[in-house]
Image 1: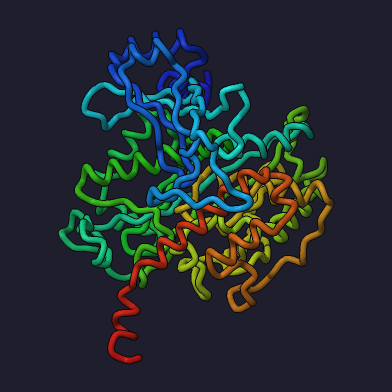
Image 2 (image 1 turned 180 degrees about the horizontal axis):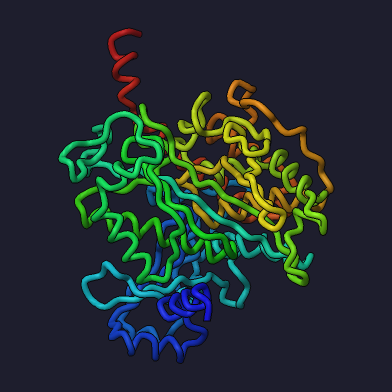
Length: 465
């Protein structure tokens, strides 16, 4: 048995079963008393119910109101309009467990398990506005061609001092040296060592859930970190990001810190991204369709890039979903402001890393870390798919810096939402119901933001205008 096979079997023991009866045995063997039955909403927040294990097995399908997938990050509900309406009865949707996601909740005080669910209508159809189902909808487009996307996400986040009063700016936490970070500490091992106890818990919590972290590094900002995940199936990797965000937050709280995935949490520090590496495998041959038999890039490779160039601006509200997200996309920073592409070029929105033919891939550097991983992956893969389907051709690759070139990405949330709803190809591929629902949510969130007066306004306008 190889080490990889052994690790796979170990992870299988920690995470996932194939049936209700296996779940019963799995829980009994671990003395599990309670189950968190969760579903990711449009913001990537875990919603659901906590129930005793016995009650779960008595009725493993739970119900929640259909409006679950229409609420904003602040818990408000959008107003209806000509294109967006609620179910007039606010009836229930059915949430069915995906037993492959069964895992313990390692930070819980009592023996507890967690189980991600999928949303269905009462007559058994997938709820098309549910993020996990939307990602599956896009993957089905690839499957019809005999293809399977492979993704590898990279998540950046900040550690900060607890901030119970949101009117005060965030600050870096104090590490084991007794001092907060100052200056730039990119890739510093010593800076990571400042928080060794915290990262030990993150690794332990992740291992207990069968989540596989590839690497951990210190990023450019003060107490800014990045976790990279191993490549694999898009739904499984979106699940891992969904669970790891919660895991990292819980570990940080244990050490009296916050972990934040806000795109731009501190004005003088870099923003946080969720880069997505993407390739596509032919299911029959196992070959990466981005490379031909001689190892050269294929027309599908270039068309995938072209699709990203053409449509990433139109799905920007899924890749940068909040007003704060657009603060990250500033000129002369590590974040892209356009959708140019290049080989091993980190100044563009679409980077092709150095690799061998079988590992040839496209890195989307546009998404921010606050994005819902299911929606971000669905949006990115959809853009590439449209490019392949339509045989699009990309611009020439950028060889120098793209940071001084014009913006080709939306500059704000309202612009992004309008472009999203106006692009007919996206309504066809995502479904009109999702497009209109998501647009209504984002517009409502923007209006909520506009009710808040910022410190900038008080500083520069209060006594001057």
